[in-house]
Length: 193
View 1 (tube, rainbow, N blue to C red):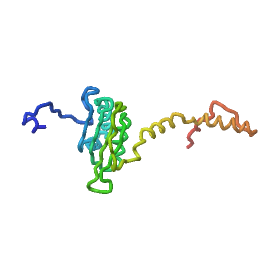
View 2: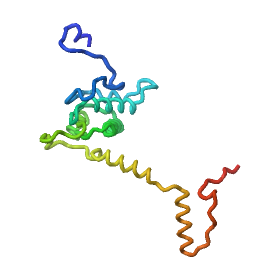
View 3: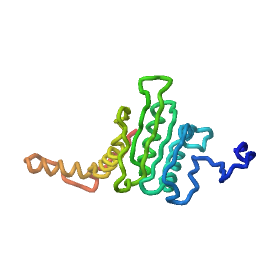
View 4: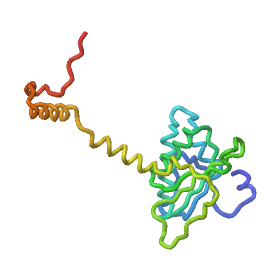
């Protein structure tokens, strides 16, 4: 930043923490790139820096700053698989579609991760990118679908009381002797000493 200011470059320069969000008007950019930057959002330098919140804030504001169908490509070097999962999950929850491209996946030192995302639906008539010979991380492609199913499964869960009442009704129809229902049916018992 200091070098750019000393050389009197044309354009504007800004010093900003990506974890606090991107301060641009909605729909300002067609595309964005990041080189070796987003992995730093996963670091918790202080006690108030929560990596998941910083990632969510970054991806939510980036999604807003990109136009519909805008692209985002980021090259990054994660420390472990948990960082990759956190980054992908935050991007998917923010509304991005896309996935992870791993360049040279067999290599330990030369392995490069590219996050390729699109915001919203792509414009009509846009050609697909040719990714022949590229290894895709398949386990994260349907992450949004899995999250939706997990959330839906939690909402439709039957309560303990309704389960007990349904089972009692079934036993009555089968001719078994069943205790009467009361206001205490399905409640937990007191803790005993």
